[in-house]
Image (cartoon, rainbow, N blue to C red):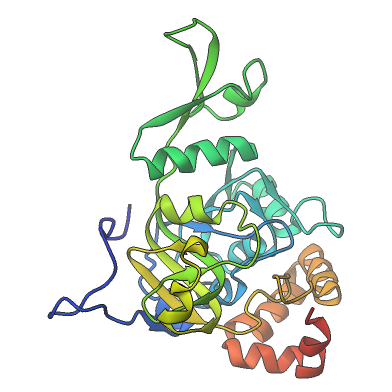
Length: 303
């Protein structure tokens, strides 16, 4: 793993007081090194931390292992930017527009990107094992299927208690998890509006969490609903309003027009895909990106 060891608590200053952890999206991803194992949250069409993904693609570290249990265009973007060597996922696509992400498909077929195939339940167990600091967790799903042949890290064994066949799902440890939350205080105590899918597990399995949030709120507000606080420990927070675009969140509908355009250029590849990356990623920070989308368009997507 490329980053420092897991933190045992929130950031504190020399006097023992809590230290604010809010920064920019660029600074938030600045220490992600070549070869890092990067988890990316979100579920199919919702809650992907796209502002962080675009900032990471702009930096263009190499040879990343991207863990995206139900991945979307964030995987295609990072592959197109030359960042990815391995993808761990149960799905990578553009729901309703491309059954398989076009850039992902092309890279796998050409052999430039390796796939570690897991179903969603395997992803859950692998992340849970990492969070619990266990080498693996058992799972019944996949017994008798081709999964152990497709993914040699899945090991069939007999349950020592009942003698029944099971699969050992090895821990999936992350250097960093890029996640989205609706809001956070200045100290990284973040709250999610919605189900969160596997995001809490991604955070628990990671040495460090980088959170993209819509807004920074007071600690007093966070303390009013402590049961909704999902992320703590070594966390960096970056404020990026509308940062899940073109995907949805609890306050924003997905921008199907933008997703359709991305699906088109992703299929085309070549200059059309490169032009998209230049305009929306390489030569644009988050504010530039929002200006390109347009305030009228963004407001029209609000729930």
